[in-house]
Image 1: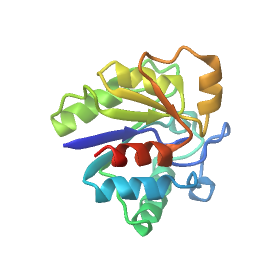
Image 2: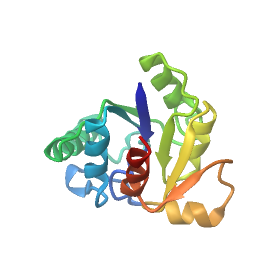
Image 3: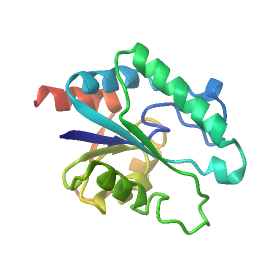
Length: 179
């Protein structure tokens, strides 16, 4: 099975330090939906793993988050793609959960759901915590410069073997050329 795990904010959609709180605020990163559609057509299972502490902070409800994801899925379908699943951590940074990245809980859930070892599975994020969570289960880390990616790159300390590209479309171009 060809599986890829993507962070949402900053990879698929534009990020905001004020959080994405409504469907109207959700705006795709240019090229990201087409990139996911190309992966879908090539037989990849595309899964999202996303911290959504705005739920715990009371910035939006689960119904609103579902509406945001419905918009993302609709726009992706219009581009000819689909997401296999969306895994979300609803907790805040002080809740001590196992699912909030950089903890590996979301990735453990994905491995269980698909009954796979995640060693070598590509994971794309824009923050250090995305990559830290991924490498704990052996995923191959990729950093995009979109979202918080440039800030993450400037801070350094990336996990060994992290590949860096401008955006999700550039990563998908490379992967699909190599198939």
